[in-house]
Length: 250
Image (cartoon, rainbow, N blue to C red; front, side, top):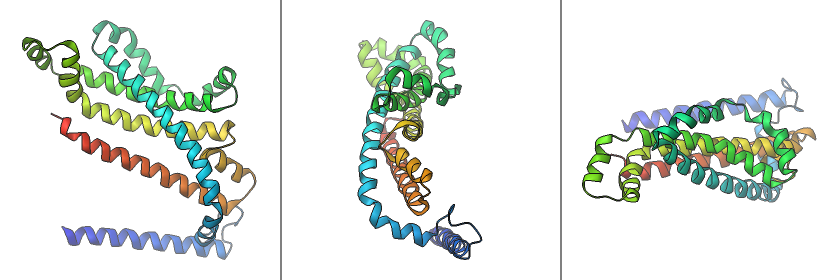
């Protein structure tokens, strides 16, 4: 198995190196217009000069992301538990909440600009809204999937409602809940980048848009690489967190 794993990684690395070499040759021989595609060496050479700028925009995006996701998780979990535990609320709000996922939120950007104006408030609210619905729907589904026998047994042992929620419902719903938090975080990051491109002066999305409209090709690809690396790091961190929370799963 170890030999197979090593062979797979060697194969992937070899394929990646070949594609990078082909990319470099295509740009240098101008098979592709360098205005639209920078070579890997050109991208690597711009990194020393863009780190300080990248850090400024990264701090802005991460602060917005942290606030948006925190609000989305707190509100989404609370609303999901409330609606999921009440048949009446579920019948009333469940179908309506599902619309929040399928409606293209990008069409609401003009409304957010009207309500909040230009600034971080509109960006954070859009990120919050993008992340809220996956968390809400998964929390609601997780609560509704708890076996009734668990609840009956907890009540028979004299557990208070808050004890049932914390010690029975939450652990049973944790797998679905963690999945919702992961999806909500991904959607929140996408929403933030879209809003930054549309209206912000600072942030990774605003930086990428500025480089694109000014045709700074090598710097643009460097900014994209940094943004992808940050997004992957966040996703891997959330995946690690979900694995650590696996002790709650029953």
